[in-house]
Structure formats: C-alpha cells, structure tokens
Length: 261
Image (tube, rainbow, N blue to C red):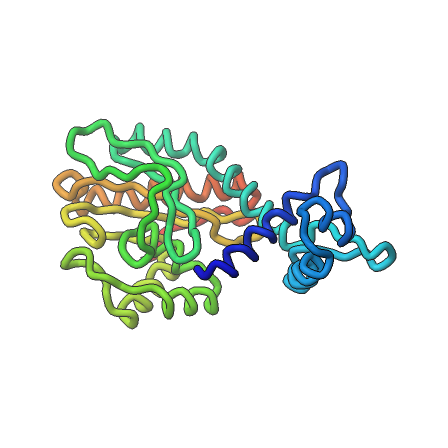
C-alpha cells in the first residue's frame, strides 16, 4: 500500500479512537488539536468518513459522532462472540457423539476463519487451528458460507477469488462450483470428500442469526477410513440438528433446518 494511503488510514483510525463514552461528539477543531493536524486535513477526513456512513454530523452543532456503519460493525463483532459462546455446548455434544473434530467457521472477506474447534481424540485426525484462514471453494464449511450469501455478494466473491486445485477432488471450475452451491442451498447442508485435504471428509450446516442470514457454518470432519459413506449420512443428520439448535438460540424463529435430498 502506498505511504500516502497508509498515512490516511492511520489518521482515520486515530479519529475513531478520539471518541469515547465521555466525549461522543467532537468538532473539527477538537480533533485537529488532539491529533496535532491542520483543521483543513481533519475536515477533509471527517467529510469523507461522514459520506461513507462511518461518522454522523449533528446538523445543529456541526460536531461529529460515530455513525451507523460503526454500529453495524460492532453488531457483527458482537454476533461473532455470541455465536461462539452459544455454539460451544453443541460442539461439545457433537464431539462426544462422533469422536471426530468439530468446528465453527465464519466468513471473513473472501476466506473462512475457524472461530472455534474441538479436535478429535483419535491419533489420526485433520488438524485446524482456531484463527486459521481457509479457502471458501474447498471444504464443506466454505461451501455453506458461500452458498447462503446474498446472490450479488456471492457473485462478487466468486469473481474475485482464485480456485486453486488443492487436491484431485477440489472444485476448481466456477460453473461447477456454482452448481454445487445451488445443490447445497437446496439440501441445506454441504459435504466434502477430499476437496481440501486428500483423505478427509466433512459435513457442514448453516447457522442463522435472528434476521435469518447465515452467520456461521458448523462442521464435522475426519479421515475417510473412519468417516465412511454411512458415517457421513449419520453426521449430516447430527450437524443439521445441532446447527438448527444454535440458530434457535441465536434468535432464528424458523430454526427447523431439515435434510432434503
């Protein structure tokens, strides 16, 4: 990133840090004095942030406050923390029933991030670290997070991301991936057999928030010698039921996700 853009971002973050519960509104002069910048520089930054919805300007005092977009960001962060806490008991129950690795993934930009994980107690297992970033196109959780996005956002992501072939089973063709995502939406769950890691199989189901949007994916994964076709079918039912329960706990009124197909 060019030095000028880096400096602009740093100054924008400093402006946001200037606000506090005790000083929720600040004028151009106040912020310029705090940051030791010229009023013209601060004024341009504030105008840009206001236009983007990051700041709100009081029409009477002309002072600025944090805007609706910051509240939306805070809501995403809070929901992330909330789903992690509410999903924990379901992950523990899935882990007890399957003795396989169970995970919670969220979408972050054009990747998925492991938010919570309980590893299988077996010696042979598929290991993923909490916080690890993984591709969306390979693996059951990635397909769930992609499949249930609004169409325009899904299209934008698919036009942006590369589709590297990680294994012989990776879906590396966009048209084929879009057909697979349509199947995931119809069924209400996703299956991956060796798509990200050769010899590993996984199933995932969507977790919805109170507004009905998918906010996370619940996943069971293990090595194929243990996770047979019969086991996969069994795990599909378990992960759907667990995801539906978490969705209800998150306030989703129609949390009766069921298997189709």
